[in-house]
Image (cartoon, rainbow over all chains, first blue to last red; front, top):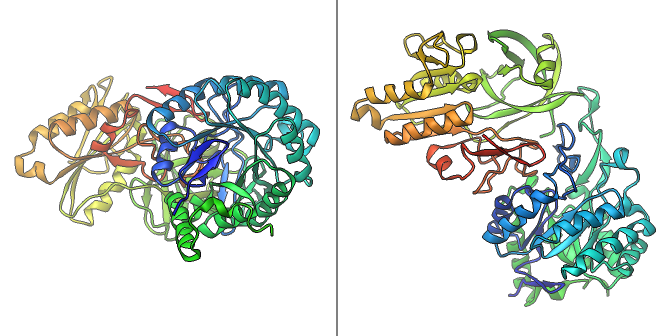
Length: 306
Length: 265
């Protein structure tokens, strides 16, 4: 049985990648996710300057969803270059860099610095839902703005021959059009999707739980939304997809691949199944492959589009 | 990790700028060394190691140090708060062991709870507490005859560090006693590092509670992951063996702030 995925020329031993913002602060913790079974990792999004993020509570877990508003805390891109170098010195699995900024120009600046690190792919976080008050409308809500950012990042990334992926938001109603615009502007891949905007209120204390009031919903509640977005993007563009959103089981991951995902992001699944979840999902996919007599896992990509 | 709600029952002075806060909560089921994330709506949510849990109430011992703890000090009994937890790995012991608990400053908070719980398993214990000065010492009267103190300025007990007292206590053990002794440490990390080294030199196993910046408490955000094992201290710690701690390259050397920037000790 072959679970390897060749994604834009980068070889992943299996399609499960640690999603951005999950155990992604340090090189050692990313390596540990690979030891636990992940095929690759995504670092937590970094910005030009260090950010401390929002006060706690920044995360809350419920039976059907997980919610977070961390506020893009990160040590800044310069310190993160060293983090990636350190990761590469201890781990051979691919690492996807992730950048965040508030304008196309700043995205290019951060990307240019991060591309001096040995990242395999660069993901453009256009879609964090938790920073609207601070930064205005997320960039992933408009084909024009999203494609402008992509074009700026492409210019600096292609000098280093690093492929780029645009990470879309489920809060946008027209992701097929946005994906198309991003690919036309130079995106080599699409990451679909980020968390969906939501809110939860504590009825005893009668106030929002997250200090930011609003947060991004992940976990099982997000999954059917993610599957539909992946499906739409697969129909709209030829570029490969990193399918992310609510995957907690091998069956969920297979569903994402059948919808069109080549790689499958996994994150808050840890809340339900512990950190062994990365390897467990892969094992569950292998059981399915055996039962269905599938030799190459990559044969499943987009197979539900008959 | 949906927040639970609790009512503040009692506030008590413990030392200068240190108070204990007792909250109503049935069957929290915590173990010494575990922590809760206490939430004051509109302010912040912070981890505190549990200083007592009797099945009906739990207590946190808090040093006034920042905006959050100031807000906590201003609360009155009856206030409703949120919390998540208990989280993390506790101190562990076997029956009939001898526990030398070593605390630095408000790091002594979980150690009295530890000694009291271990007593139920027929363990014996002694408490070693150090602080900068007498006014900051915790729990000096809790275990009469079994408490040893140090202060940096010599205002109480041994003048100097608590590690010197630990050295002295370990020196007094017979070979037989040494075999059933463990050292449990909680305090500022440079002191923890020194204490683990003293215990190791004496061939006595130790356990140490590491403080790292925590956000989620459930091993997802990655903020408290330690170099170079990569383990989140909220789930794989905060209490780890001294042997393990010494194998980690950041123990006693540096930690990360809330942005993830490395800060040297």
